[in-house]
Amino acid sequence: MTDPVREDDLHTYVDGALPEARRLDVEAWLAAHPEDAARVQAWAGQNQALHAAFDGVLNEPLPIDLVRAARRRPVRAPWRAMAAALALAASGLIGYGIGLREDQPLPVPLHFARDAAIAHAVFSPEARHPVEVDAAHAAHLVSWLSKRVGVPIKAPEFGALGFELLGGRLLAGESGPVAQFMYQDAGRHRITLYVRRAVTGNRETAFRHVTENGVEVFYWIDRDFGYALSGQIAHQDMQKLADAAYRQMMGG
Image (cartoon, rainbow, N blue to C red):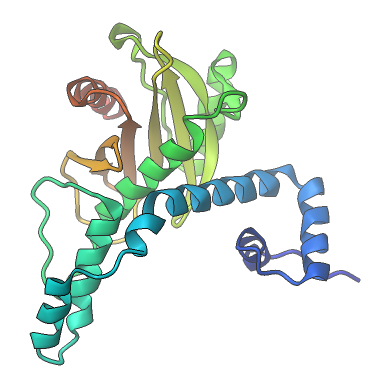
């Protein structure tokens, strides 16, 4: 009897590292389980986006000044400072009021903003299938995503700012299910709202902005949940949309 397909099988399948026989088992499983097939497709798209965005940077040689500085540092884990610097350089993040100490990893909110930007980059260019559930079924969409994410959420309205709801989809995140709402204006510019459970113990609550490879991301964390609005439009327009989303999502 074929062993049941597990989560690690799906990840290994996306990485292209499964033996031939197991790959065929997983493909048969995906054909019969559309929810898992959608997750695998999303992971594959994220991998492609990551490679497209960062391979050029990661393949560059280390700056000679950074190498010399690392050699001059004492033995007490100089790699931590280098890893933090390289993570920031590779991701292209520009944050407000965020500082790193030598022994401090990349802050959780920056990982959250990066994930939101990647999800935007993966799905916003889609012509035929940008969303799983379209705006014609908005009530069902909001109810379904609220149930899966684990908190009542709503799709903010941006009609006064020229953007209308296209629909949304369910994504898989490191801390559980993620809801993504997508909007479009008359010029076919798209923005996405990314909602997920925050990492346990996170204390970051400020309303912040970063730019990730040309994607403007405004994000905030309210108690146990994080929200991020992403788009590739003018900064001032994104800020107006983010302000509107914040007021509506927070009940203001």
